[in-house]
Length: 245
Image (cartoon, rainbow, N blue to C red; front, top):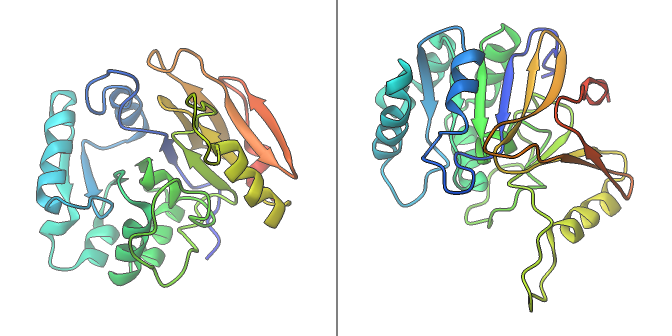
């Protein structure tokens, strides 16, 4: 299904924390401003090693001071109906492969696309942002489980790489992030990848996609990887040209 950028309202956050910040501290103001409602459906399927209810409770605790009522999808008997009835949808971070596997298992790909097409706000961070792209082929996560397909929600027509960093620890001899993304570009040279460092986000509203930073990200640039080239994206840049590819 094709999602229209004219109706989609997306907040794709790199991370739930930045530096030594409290949990979700870099995101709270943006979430409040992005969502038209104080009641948000939370999808915790990226969480591995903890009950979904515990993950939901953690998010509830972080967002309660902002007056946001978070309801976990695990509390509903019918997840598809929960998405159809949602006033806003929020998808948390964790393992991207597990998240996408669960979205397929619960048959939520089309319902989420339908919701976004109807103007329901979508918020994701980390894995929740990864799955908003064309596929999860540029995730940083370990493939601990095999989803039916790497094809993701396709809410935007490009790939994402949250937690982007070009840092290479001294003495580290594995592939860097840039090398990994270079491998992707060699396989898919026409597919854009946008790397968003911690504390930054991409926001789509009224057909306009912008790259945004916060006080927690110190105006860090994002990066576009395309056709073997890496290009810096300054804070506030209009990235809408990547919506029509």
